[in-house]
Length: 539
View 1 (cartoon, helix red, strand yellow):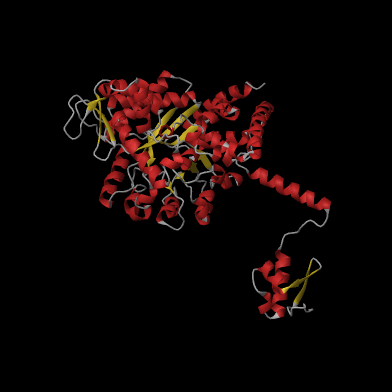
View 2: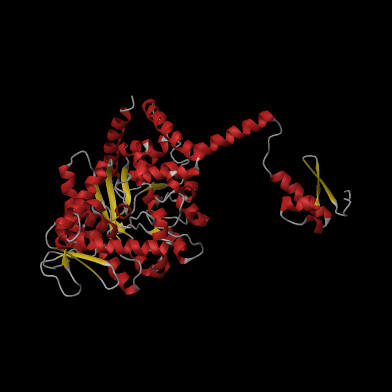
């Protein structure tokens, strides 16, 4: 050892021929070696050197090691193990040229990157993107995370269903919109015929635009209108409540669900799985349908649509998803209903979930007994739990991820917080349990502003199992699946995700569906035929 002029010891660890001071040792080791007995410090430094990776010692070695690491990283990206055909490589070249132009322009001017902006402010810009236009034409397989009252575009609801006769509207004392079909409005609210209210506006378009705003969270200034997640969720739930009054009218829902399937088919989606609370449908005279009758309406409408479009659409399934913020006794009623529905509709009811703002609902651990009961007995009910749809860490909400996996969830809804739980993340990977990533939803409901910062970006980089889905597209002005695929491709996949990433997402959406093996095979065969036809356009 030597001695510095300030009295500090030099530590002759000779790492790469260098002599370290105590302060430098502390910076390297994270500890104050100067306070240690000197032999121990030497041992610690020696161990650190022995365990550290080999580094380049010359120019050639540096570039060789760098190229190896880059190749390894790129091979880890979701989908990069797929081998593209010659025809697919031509399509990929066109796609990546468009992507490079779009990302390149944004890299020079960061304000131009669309996924960094609130979706509601850039919908038109996204639709003008050549990358989006490619994705919209591409067969995308399945959408597996949807909610029953916010799937069809709100503009269609307003332009079609609100012109039906016998539709009434009113505002509650706290200013919330209520709507329903009836021949005899009650005295619970100051009900007015929608047709009469519409007639009081300067133009029909004026009224319709205002109504679209009430039935969705669409706004020109989302940051001002929704300063935090609670504000966004409150507006979201108010809009859903208003729209449910329209679509829960049984004839309206039959038209509504048929339109949903039409919109997704036009967006080149072949199969859906949607969740619903089974809030009772009603007839014009106020008669309410039972849960079983409501599920029959769902099933029969899907079957009618498939029969009307042979070879163009495969089908849909339903996941019973009651609210999560209920007392234990009510949860027992819900899981009992789930088993009965699964028994009565074994090929249509896929399973069970819980919905609602997760931060404000009861955590899964508070409901363990009835939830465990779902997997007991002769009628097995698969589960598809929302879990970790939160920005918090160490709270019951994000710990739902652990509980969902231990309850053998088939998929994890959102899973936004999974990177904060490495054990849960490892278990999900080991059991091949995918997360249902809903990028636009997570952005507009205030979990993340810039989608490049979404946790799923890191998961994409390591090839984690996932599907991409739109959640409640109608509520924020989206339609179909392409918008979420676009955001995932541009932001979550980064600059190097290519056609293989998109193809893998499509494959995952079918492989991770609730369909049995034979049905999955049929769905994949239908998709593959459409995929090959799409790729042939680039020859």
